[in-house]
Image (cartoon, rainbow, N blue to C red; front, side):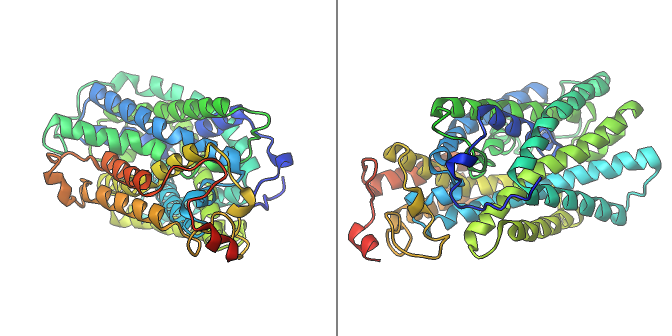
Amino acid sequence: MPIEQRGVDTVPEAERTSGPRDLVAILLGSNLCLGVIVFGWLPVSFGLGFWASVTSVVTGTLVGVAVTAPLALVSLRTATNLSTSSGAFFGVRGRLVGSVVGLLLSLGYTALTLWIGGDVMVGTLARLVGLPTGGAAHAAVYALLAACTAVAAVYGYRLLLKLSKALAVVMTVLLALGLLAYAGDFTTAAVPDTPYLLGSFWPTWLLSAVAAGLSGPVAFITLLGDYTRYVSPERHSSRSVWRATCLGLVVGLLVPQLFGTFTALAARGGLDYAGPLVAASPGWYLVPLLVAATAGSVGNAGLMLYSMGLDLDAILPRATRARATLVVAAVATGFVFLGHFASDAQSAMTSFVLLLTAIGTPWAVITLIGHVRCRGSYDPEALQVYNRRSRGGIYWFSAGWHPRATVSWAIGAAVGLAAVSTPMYEGPLLALTGGIDCSFVLSGLAGGTLYAVLTPNRAPGTVTAPEALAQAE
């Protein structure tokens, strides 16, 4: 299979051969991994029991999917990735906001996937063959996983799609076996000596809904376009693509996350997930667990690295996608080592997802408002101006930026960060929200409302920039 040469340029119609089934397969197969499963452990680590964990995760996921899934329709129309597509609203240079947000999201989730997958691999190998569990073993396993992931990401979309289709079947079987393996130790009660993280039930439940549930779909706000740009709007309707996206996200996220909740309670994993998971596993499930940790991590992290390569390619147009992917693979591996040797898993995960949700949500809301206003009508050539190192076009706005959209996002992100509650940082607006983290809602409302007020509603094919300046430049 040849290495994909295409970066964030427009995908020709002849190459747009994927369909809604492929979209479901890639969202399902890539998410059945320990990097997503571990989010089901978060509510347990917060002190919640089974039913409270399930309701918070399901509620957060459904809300997140409702906001995130329509973004898949943007790249269906533009034939390029979502960060580049957002140039229609932020400007061809302002779309760098989306590229940076996407790069940070993918970087964090890649590191998390390799981190938890590597820890489980080391633990299972220690039980199976007596592998030492010191720093050298972890370093070797992390490096091996990162190398395999980088290869898959460099080869590109077609290989990752085939891998996801295989993982959708293999990982479903492995998780079903896991339910049998841990069923004997399962309990619906919260783990003993694990108090509510925020002191009482409802604030902790809401934190879980955001950190464990909502964060899953939000992780895809810049990723969905990586897949739907290969779907042809001439052969597949927007409704079918939207339905496939919803199905893929709901099933692909809830199945692994609820498996994580189930196994965390069975393993009594209040303070850690990987160690208790391996320790509680019966001997016959160690090999399936090792396969799940290896294959699932490569599939999920491979897609994240692929997206990171596209985002870095968008930021540095002179870089090829393959070279950009190798660079971000090295950076992500560095974050894995930092996470393992220098961070507390629960605090690092919770802070990471909450902070990035706060800055990513207003970007997603503004992009959706813009998509609705233009009714899916774009100028694909004008979106590529920055990538070609040229100037002008209907999305040039003011020096390549749409100031009002950018300011709306910045204020929305600032409001979100001021309202966030993490183990490492608490925003000043928490005093006004009763100590409850409302960062997702407030950031989206602030950014979206400002954008709607500051920019007039326009018909398809028109722009909100100084057109005379755009055409002159």
